[in-house]
Length: 65
Image (tube, rainbow, N blue to C red; front, side, top):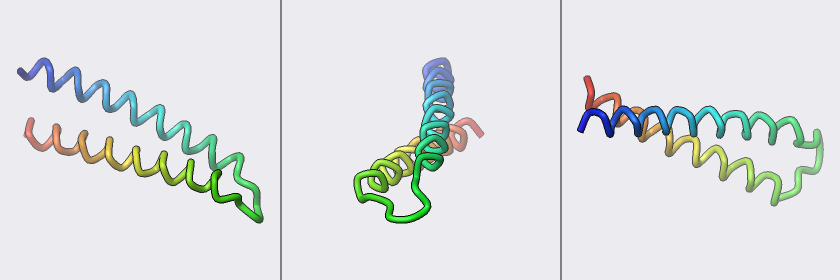
């Protein structure tokens, strides 16, 4: 069972890195003024997904400790 958790942790950490890169790219494309709602919603969705992945990673790490 520990093997599955390790795979899951690695997959989640990889997903986290990809999400953080997407968030940074999205922030680079934000205009200084007049941010359109769809653009902001995309960024917020990415940040929400990142937070959920972080929560899963932390949960797995606590179980291992």
